[in-house]
Image (tube, rainbow, N blue to C red):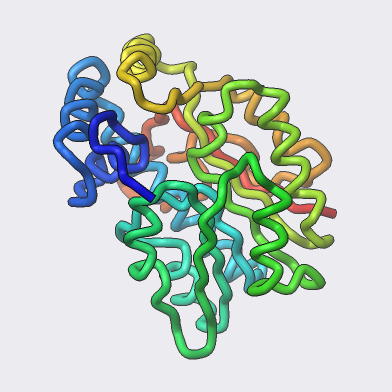
Length: 259
């Protein structure tokens, strides 16, 4: 599958903001233009990654989850889901799903694993939940709890009801005791953030739609939210320090348990 380097791609721009090297000049240019309008985006990207690490540590530790389905994986960077999970529980099993050919090309970096656990990669699209579920059943046991990770991907489904329907299909397949983790961009703190996203969406890249926290909350219908509920990602079980409460960013996240 050919990689298009003529238009920016969100996974590669995100990688650029995180300080990675798996991006092209078109992604760097788009990323810099975004930061000129909204400099806080790089901080938001790092806060999002830290949220992933904290939620996975919680799930693999306190919640006792040993299976993770990470849809919309993005490019490998530091603290990938399998690294965090297997550091807590070496027997953890992780399946990554993404539709980006560059992620596929770098999938080997995601397929390292402890001897006790496993990692796998499925090349598929969020809009194909049946394909995803059929493929991942080869690696995960859906008779036991599974944590579904949707990190920064739902904004790529512009229609809200379509996005909710896709999430419902995936959550319906989770057994009782499974979890849903969502982190997505919001539009409540900064007009500059909204303006920067508008410009990005006009660049030829796949658009990313920011949503309100209330809309993100709708994805957790029927689930039991883990404390502290749906909050700015920096505020979810943050490490207490002498610097006080961390500042909010325009990205909200939550962890929900399926009864």
